[in-house]
Amino acid sequence: MENKEIGVYDEDKAIAFIRKAIPAEISDKYTDDDLLFVIDTIWDYYESKGLTSLDADLTEDELIDTDDLTAYVLKEIKKDGVLIMDKTDINFIVKAELEYEETLDIFGD
Image 1 (cartoon, rainbow, N blue to C red):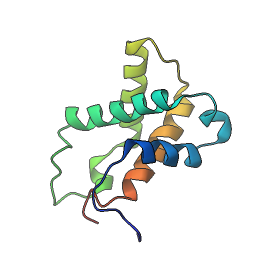
Image 2: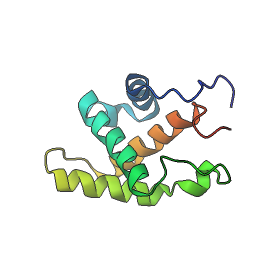
Image 3: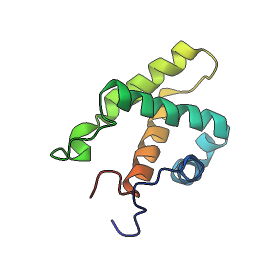
C-alpha cells in the first residue's frame, strides 16, 4: 500500500480514520474516549497474545484473528461495565482500526 507512515501509530489519527471508515450512525454513538478505549483494548489483546514483538516470519493476517479480537474487545467492555457497545458496532470499529494499522508500516510490508 502506498503512502505508509513508518510505524508511527497516532491515536488521534486512528480515531479520525475510524470515524471516516465506520457508518455515521455508529460513529455518532461514541465519543473519542469510547473509541480510544477500544483502541487500548485492541493493544491489550496484542500484549496478551504476545503480538507486540512481531515475528518477522509471520504476516499480519496470520497474527490477527479478527473474530477473536472482536470477542476479546466485547468481553473487556462488558467486564469494564462503563461503556455499552453493540457487538456489530465493535466489529466495525475493530476492522476500521486494523485498516488504520495497515496504512502504517508496522508490519514491514
